[in-house]
Length: 394
Image (cartoon, rainbow, N blue to C red; front, side):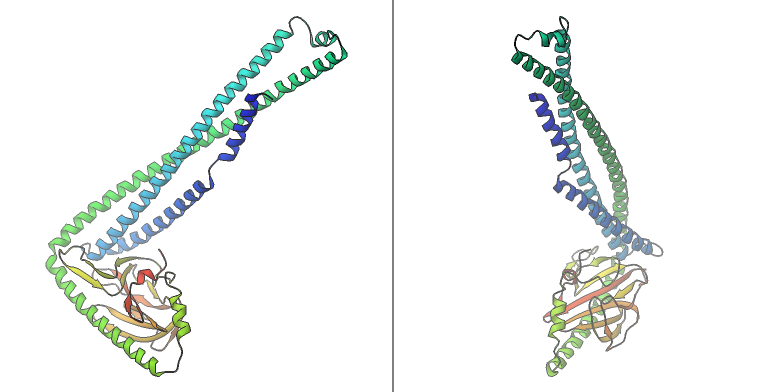
């Protein structure tokens, strides 16, 4: 077998094996999964955004929904760009393979043509039979017979190899055309998402301007919110402290429940099936009021109207209370941990009830600006903690 045939066979085997590497396939699968999750979030936020536009459009809740939609669409665009980049790499790699195969194919054809030419040239003066009978010894006859056989097999293998390379070349050409079509579809998606994103940013800028002009109303609203949340914090702290004192005098061992809750950090289900965090834990700047900060002892999760609010872990309902502006609050004890669910319009449980994970506690409250949001808190033995670090990634 000639060096060209050996090299071509190696190239063909390499082409058949190279394809997409495992890491590239995993990256593509990861990007596809990420895109599906982002599209799901966009649909969720769009439903919430639509709810805020049915009555008042100038609200902080609508701004939160817009901000979340912008962040999610930006992430989707980045995922699409990453997919396009991967396809560019695949297309470039496949083009290199095609170029190599075309060179090999041409070399094979040239060598095959040379073999045919040599065969025809040697056959002009005498036939293969004459060539054999012209042998001077039996050994020479044997060697000439062997040579003719090898030469015939080489021509046959060369012809077969040309067919193999031609078939593989067609496969690669089809693959690269499919990749180019996929890339164009992704570029079209990216263009569409960019247009949607620009429209959202335009609405965001317009809404911020209108909210800035309503500074006086927003400050009054913020003062009422702060007063309600101070009362909520005070009452929750008092209830938890009373329970701690009672537990200290009790012989009931709740260490197993406490340990079970602690082990779920980062894995707890969300208290609502869909939504996004509209106000984070801790101190942060107000979205429109300059030099004004907000302190949140929990997180606010903006969701859809009438959404069911669910327990995140098994426990005992310790207290149910109502505070103006924050609706109803349900406090559940999980050993040395507590969860509190505020801004409920209706409550399905009562004090001392034992509840299970994902059991519905009530329905979310929709405020005067048509915003539906649940305020969720977690307290450990030292005080309030960031609930986002305890919830599943979403």
